[in-house]
Image 1 (cartoon, each protein chain N blue to C red):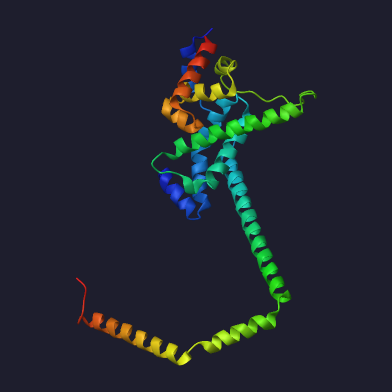
Image 2: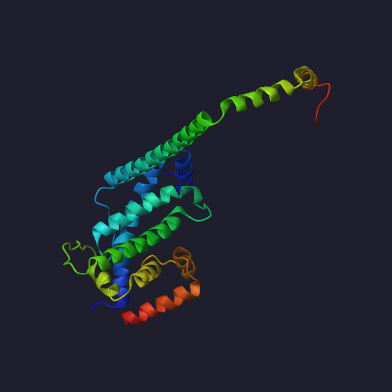
Length: 108
Length: 163
């Protein structure tokens, strides 16, 4: 009977090989792709379900009340002031951009 | 030849065929590990290597590049083997009344398989990793989520059994 070390050393030299590595790799990648596709489908199903429930909730909720309050809130916004602020801030940032481009002001 | 870490990065960016290169590179290694752990059962060894590659792909984002891919894959394969054994035991317990209808095909170095036959599945893992793959006690402890001291005592218990 072989000694312990002999058996171990012999086993270290044994090389085990898959029957068909190409096929094995192809099959494994196919399984991975299948799993990915099923995960994507699951995500889509969940998103559709959430969307469906939201639509259903909106449909059954008192929609006129909701739109009424939305219009009131929109009317309350000072559009003139908002437009003026946007004009001033874009104007200042545009001026800064031009000055930086021309090298009048710069960062070192 | 492209480095494993580079292939992992590319596979993560969505190139599944880069993962295919890794599968081909380590197919024989994992199959060999599976053969040794299962005592020469080709079917089980193939299952273990496939499950390991599938698991490795799904956890690829958590791959720590400070360790080698081969090292990481070994840990996954060992745990796949443990899971498989646990599942098989569950089915054997349920099936204990019926006769065994399937006998696995055993191949390889029968001397080694006979040598480790008296060991439990856990001891087979420890023994194979330590004496065939020459992993350090700390690495084995890392694979199996055990303390190095526990690994040492389990290995010495396994050696006692083989004397």
